[in-house]
Amino acid sequence: MTLVRESPIGVFDSGVGGLSVLLAIRQELPAENLLYVADSGYAPYGDRDADFIAERATKITEFLLQADVKAIVVACNTATVVSIAKLRAWCPVPVVAIEPAIKPASLSTRTGIIGVLATRQTLASPSVARLCADHGEQVQILLQACPGLAEQVEKAELNSAATRALLLRYLEPLLQAGADTLVLGCTHYPFLSGLIRDIAGPEVAIIDPATAVARQLARRLAD
Image 1 (tube, one colour):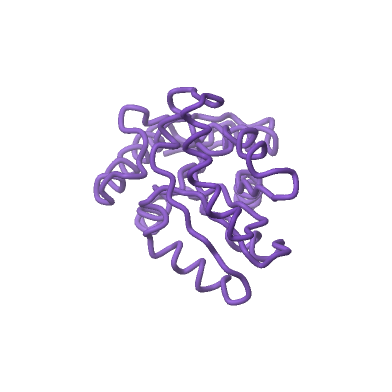
Image 2 (image 1 turned 90 degrees about the vertical axis):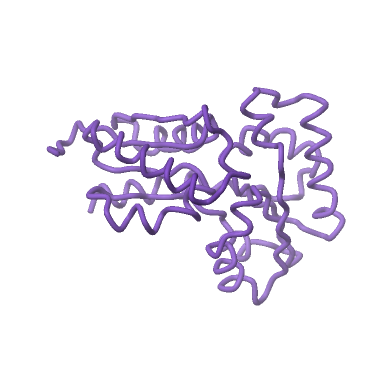
């Protein structure tokens, strides 16, 4: 594999959600060539078996390497928590991954209560347990699984009554508990940020880690 400056950066997710990360990368690195893989045939990953997710992540990474990418971004929280260690163990190019932004949320909350919106597979992972253990001593971290929400984004139902009903179901327990910071732990959810803001109100912070991922990618490329 011959890598040159013009080689693309590979980005993948289970569907369209990772486009939120791709946008952040484009804004941070406007001169770079980008190659995006949306694994829409198997979207979303959130309720699938971990071995299946790891297999898909491996196959997509192999495909991107055949395209001579110079770095890979795993733009899927579920794929990150399931497969990132194994990917980094053999992948010959830098692999940058997204994970729920629990650390910055714990540092910015005023009430000491944060809510994490993510898929079941992400929230059940050792990675999220580690993040909660590392950053949860001084704050209360409420984990909220959101089945069906990524599917609404895949269907482009960003403002439908059904999507609003799902969000109300998932947000109300967090808001009633006093959460003043919401972590978007799935790359599909930023496409619903307007609806989330409408429900949660202007005083609740919404944290999307896509910009942090783009900046980390820029640092890795500079190295």
